Image (cartoon, rainbow, N blue to C red; front, side, top):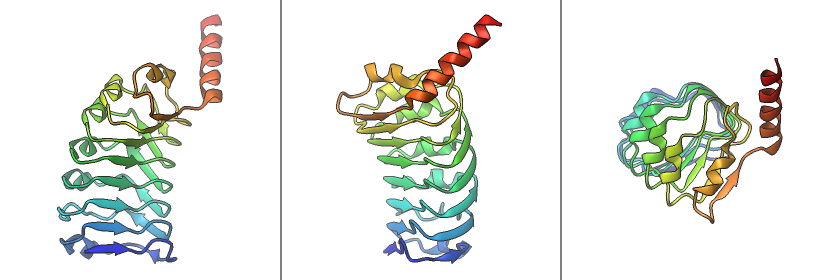
Length: 190
C-alpha cells in the first residue's frame, strides 16, 4: 500500500492507528500542516519510503523508527524537531537517503552513521549539531550528497573533501567556518 498525500493542506495530528496499517510501503505526507509529535511507526515493518518533511512536527524522532529495517528513504526535514540525533537510526542497514535537515537537532552526529554503507544522501544541515562530523563518514563510498552547513560544528568539515567520493555534492558554509576560525583566534589571544 502506498499513501501519498503530499501538498494536500492536511492539518492536525496523525492518529496512533496509523501504526496498525502494516502493509504500507510508502508514506508520503510531505508539505502539509500536520503538527504534534512524530507518529510511532515501529510496526510498519514493510515501510520503504517515509517522507514527513515540511510539516510542523515537534519533539524527537521516536526510537521505534530504528525498527524500520526495510526503510530506504527517511525525510523529516523542515519541521520543528528537537533532541539528539537518534542513534537507533544507525541500525537501518537498508537506508540510502537520510534528510533530517532544517530542524533543531542537537548534540553530535554519531560515528555509527559512517557504517551505514548504503547511504547515498546525508543531509544534516541547518540544525544545532556540535562537535565534528565523524571520521567514519569517509567510509560511505556510495555517498552522492552530503550537506552539513549551518550547524555549530567545532571542527571545519572541509577536511572531508579529501576523503569523500570525488563526485559527491558537498555543502558546508564558508562564512560559518570563517566565523569559527575568528572565534578560535580570539580565544587564543585571551
